[in-house]
Length: 155
Image 1 (cartoon, rainbow, N blue to C red):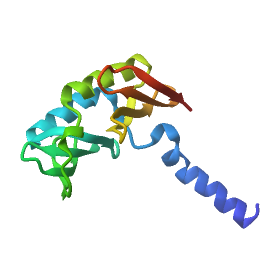
Image 2 (cartoon, one colour; image 1 turned 180 degrees about the vertical axis):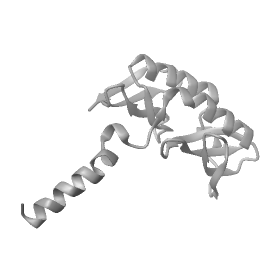
Image 3 (cartoon, helix red, strand yellow; image 1 turned 90 degrees about the horizontal axis):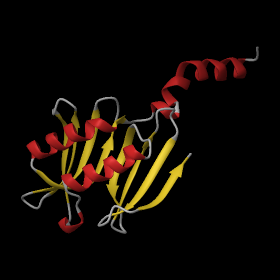
């Protein structure tokens, strides 16, 4: 076996499982309620984005009731891992807990089991990226006010 091939094969065997699409940073969709509880305890009043950062970590980006824009990484036990105050307000664009939960319910109806990211885009649409049970990537775009599904993308 040639050294290059041996190295490639060893890398694939060693790191392949870590890079599998089904193993991408994601959390079960049913953890969103716990994530929102943690956000509420921290003082988040509206959300720009919720992003999974590993098996038990996530980042919340949004606004506190004080109108301060924040980005905070937590674990599912509610421990703060990193926090940052961001510039800019534009609070009116943030999603409420109820809007997020409604969007999550729609994602579940479409077969999503794990999420990678939930966000409010620049066009005021809710986007949810995640995976189905079999690891298929699934992205939904919803109209914010009516929750009409505008786009479903499966890869």
